[in-house]
Amino acid sequence: AIGKAKRGSFKDTDPISLLKPCLEYVTQDLPSKAMVDDICVGTVLAPGGLRASECRMAAFLAGLPETTTLRTVNRQCSSGLQSIADIAASIKAGYIDIGIAAGLESMSTNSMGGKNAKKINITDEVKMNMESLNCLLPMGITSENVASKYNISRREQDEFSTVSHQRAAKATFGPNKKFSQEILPITTKWKDPKSGKVKTITVDKDDGIRPQTTVDGLAKLRAVFKKGGSTTAGNASQVSDGAAAVLLMKRSQANKLGLKIMGRFRAFAVSGVAPEIMGVGPAYAIPKVCKQIGISHLNDIDLYEINEAFASQAKYCVDKLGLSMDIVNVNGGAIAFGHPLGCTGTRMTVTLLKEMERRGSKRGIVSMCIGSGMGAAGIFERI
Image 1 (tube, one colour):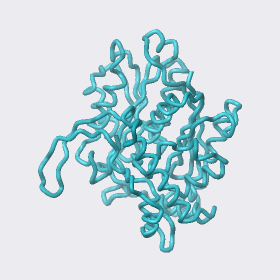
Image 2 (tube, rainbow, N blue to C red):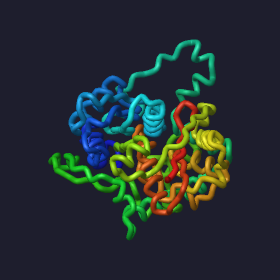
Image 3 (cartoon, rainbow, N blue to C red):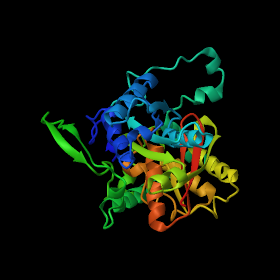
């Protein structure tokens, strides 16, 4: 599940405790956890060395032996998807036989641009290079830039956000309770901010979903990043805590072990775009990854998960690519339930594969924009 940072279900849960149950779950059907050769964890905000140690500790606590190696990877918001690409590439190259790709972010523990965050040293050379300077733009300003440049209205953004909440609410509370099939209940400690008492709670639903969200209600919210702007707390992704993991191996290995195959990771691509409009990244990464395997993003993809960093950029990408919202984020997105940066790509993959299984879909894409000006996309196929 995904919790609201600083005030949600996982605000008092350390990163190690977030990751541990995910690693336990994905290895539970293996004859031996020692069969896992390597783990790659996508994670963004924590200092690299510290988070790498935390992840290694989580692996030990999950019962993985010292022979199972681990590293982290940071490609901003695509880190969870990048971890999948890295593990898949290692398997394909013959470096390993079985690996785990995971994503982890505790934005309660490590804030974006908090007062204790290390500041970048802006040299004179950087000051003279606009592209370099634009890498420092707040993400909300890049959202405003996309909305302004491509005429994405405030109402369009609020309408997009309302749909996200409605779909996420149906997937969570509807008759099929779809998300219960991909959320691992986690029992943890939670401190009541009013009474100060520490309670034991079990988290099995995302915190941020607001079923009663309406366009009119969102229209009352003020712009956050720019006076007279259109990006608000209601049409931007929520800062969040969460972890996710997937198990990868060759199909022959999975068949030998009698494991259910959810899908095949077919292709991966990253595209570079201007930092000041970083949100347009998926509009370039998706055609690029489709070209790799000679397919059309319009005719050959059954389902899309495109991260909703902001409604402005998600709406732009959908329109630019000519996609129908009938096959995009059919169970809502990050505007509704949150965007724990390093976790998102892995979480989106699980959501995509589960929905592809329900629909009998052949092929789907996970894609997201990336701070500093990139977009990533991965193709998954059911076999």
